[in-house]
Image (cartoon, rainbow, N blue to C red):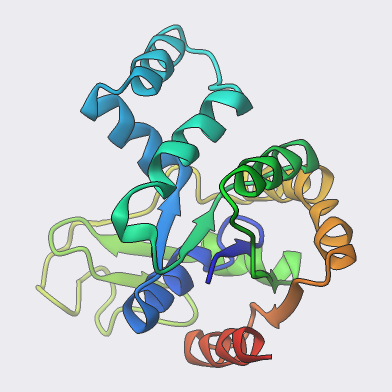
Amino acid sequence: MNLILLGPPGAGKGTQAKMLQNAHGFVQLSTGDMLRAAVKAGTEVGKLAKDIMDRGDLVPDEVVVSIIDERIDQADCAGGFILDGFPRNTGQAEALDALLDKKGMKLDRVIEMKVDDDALVERITGRFSCKDCGEGFHDIYKPTQKDGVCDGCGSTNLVRRSDDNEETVRSRLQTYHRETEPLLPYYQDKGILKQVDGMASMEEVARQIEAALAA
């Protein structure tokens, strides 16, 4: 089964993709990870991507599609894959459809993780972690038992990501609404779009996704 997880940054797509990978053996394909792997492997497409990135330019859609083309031909994708972070717009979706059609493949499900903007801002801006052991926390939902001290290892080296601030998060949400939300009617018309409540607990979101896959 081949899937796409859609939703704004911070919706939990990566977490759910990993859970699906563990449960079903689907391979999680992150465009960022694939780009880095192709560059490291020194493939022809990887060399091209490296030249572009070294210039500080964005990697064009046709190069990203070529990297996806290479990746899904690998044996571990035979049982299905999950695309996380691609496509981001209808042009990319059409290019992906053309690629899969050429290979005699198709998308089976597109899962939209619906979230509330304000709640998502609260979720993202409140999170922090321990730099020493990696344990994650949240100002509201998972505060440390002792202020400023990691519950896991006792370190006081607690940090927040620099981009986990309201201005940056709302800017990323605006980009998602403007560029990626038009994919929803695109996949709705194909009859493969399913929606889940991305604001529910991690376990409940996973349950809804499983139900969407079984439908």
